Image 1 (cartoon, rainbow, N blue to C red):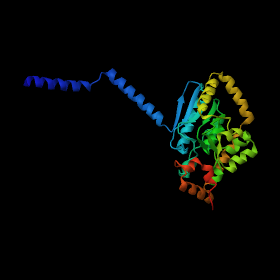
Image 2: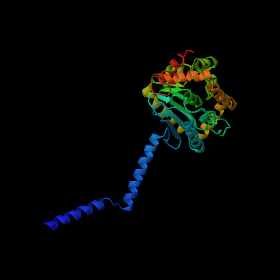
Image 3: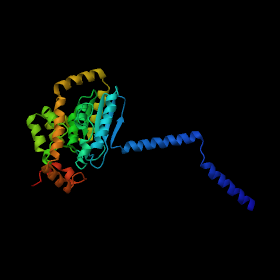
Length: 317
């Protein structure tokens, strides 16, 4: 009886030891699966995610909850993504969208130390990385489309304006250049893009009125190409992107080049906007307004970020 018990214990121990040993093939397979899982998880956690839907059609997704704030770190990441797009000869169309409910991009990060922004090295155009990115984005060979669901304010609106086309959710999109209401000058080039897009009077209303525009009004002003019912937005944008991706690249590039020549602002108009932003945001009047907004909830989930146009007009000296 004791011998049987002893044999059973030995067999159980052997089985336990054996179960922890894998063949090299099994080990490699497990490691590969683990690496894939980690890679997928890392991709999901990236603040700005680049997806190759096909060789010709790529997507850039803002994935920085809760508000998709863009600051120096995100600008550097956007520049790296732009470098990759420009370096690939097969890309014909790029869609920018968001995975964060309620926000495409809220605005630039106003709480980071100013030197984090001013200390960034110049981009290939010789300009600061923000106007550099906007200029390069608008002049890319690939066609660029922005899909706006939620708020696109400040640099979110500016990125949309620098792209070739903008499509918005009729029910959920909100666009604005709120900066003048907060006491400073927009820095990402809207003064160069908007008058050419919507006309002088409407550009002044958007930039100096500094209020929110819903999808329907943005469409009426030509701030966006179209405002579609929210349930139709993704399918429409994806369908258009796939359509363009199926076309001959030479015809796309040469046609876009001629449209750019007729419609884009000169590069020289971009850097002065950024310089004016940096100068104006340091003024005591701007600092007082931004401080009041921060105290009410700026850059935090809540009513201020959802209704920024309303809150910028509430400030009293």
